[in-house]
Image 1: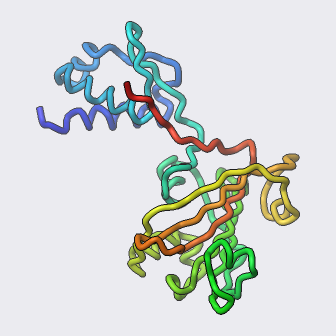
Image 2: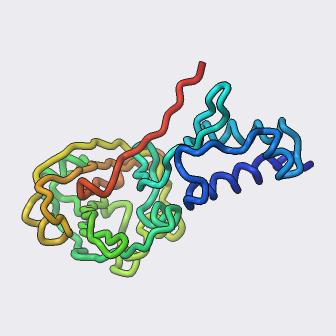
Image 3: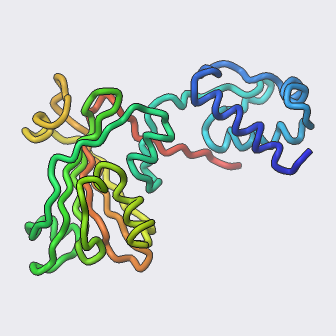
Length: 238
């Protein structure tokens, strides 16, 4: 068998869990049964199951086997740094981005403080509504330092700003700091989002840094309460 055979097993089982073919709570076939199904060794199966466990797809219970965990909820990456487009494609969701506002502005004191700017600096203000499965449930308000982003267009904002920054401008995005709070919905939230009867929203404040630690972006990502859980899967190793 090839050395990457366990990755083939891992990817096939992970895909079956993500698309719901393997339901949360069920037990996977035994290592012996899986080794027969995939025509490989139990050691290869064991490596695949270990990787599934480490990535939050299954829970290995001594004496009972491997139980499938629930991964069907929208997984907003608290510790990761990925674009909305990347998340949506990974989760196989029907999505659309509506650009409500795009302009180059002189920021107010609050935005200057968030991005550590002077009164002479300008920023790109981008307001986008994220529609998922025909509901407008995320409002993103982004502010990009013009020093690093000399120009932006509506087409870029509708597609992926990060793709443009990294592949066209060769901007080296490195890490982010995030803060998550629950706040009362504003008039703007109610106007631009399908909030139904919800009076509060989840707000993720995001500070994105370049490799040299310069602040590139400040974002307020505003989410309808019932639609998203913020998940950072962790496993304690012993």
